[in-house]
Image (cartoon, rainbow, N blue to C red; front, side, top):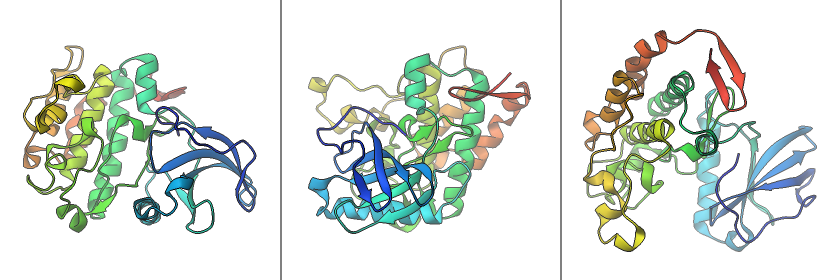
Length: 299
């Protein structure tokens, strides 16, 4: 699993972070709380991924709570499209989660490397992630950070990073910013002053992610940093309509994505409705799927 650019601190190769668990290499990370490493686990005799609290943040309550929250979510929310966790080390010098190692690039990396996804790859991706979000909602949970960086294009694609998962009850009380700016639903941007945060927020995140997969850009671009003066400058989705999708995107898909990007969460489809609306398009695809470097594609 990979993320953005590197931070200033990391373990060297071969460092032991727990008995029988050694670092193989470091993944890049934008997080100020965690570092992610590829590790060898002697007990499981397998390559795994360790998500560690950074040493300068070990005493940070937010970092500890994040590890605990993600561990609880990962052990509760077990789904074929969601990354699995195998262990949580809460004490000692290197608190961390032990996660499965997923082969493949993030959706963000695939689009940056290869350009927008073809329909044959986009539609299966949409159905897979919608199935995970339907399951989250049925379990009374919200992911709150669905974005291209949190989808690994393995076979099948996998949703990762459950550090922001909240129950419906917890989400209804949120009065602070939570998520990643360009993929946050409007209600996530309003610090508790708008509609309550519900599973509809994840549908907005999914639609914004698929818009990115179709275009290589975000649906609500912001003005340059020096020209941002208001909350709506930082979060254009509060007031603006999404950028139009290219004509190469089928009208039925454009309609689904526009509906899912509605400012009013009541106007968005559920995850199941989202998937059902895509079924006619999926039915038109070839039915033989092959594995490519960036995931499953129909041929």
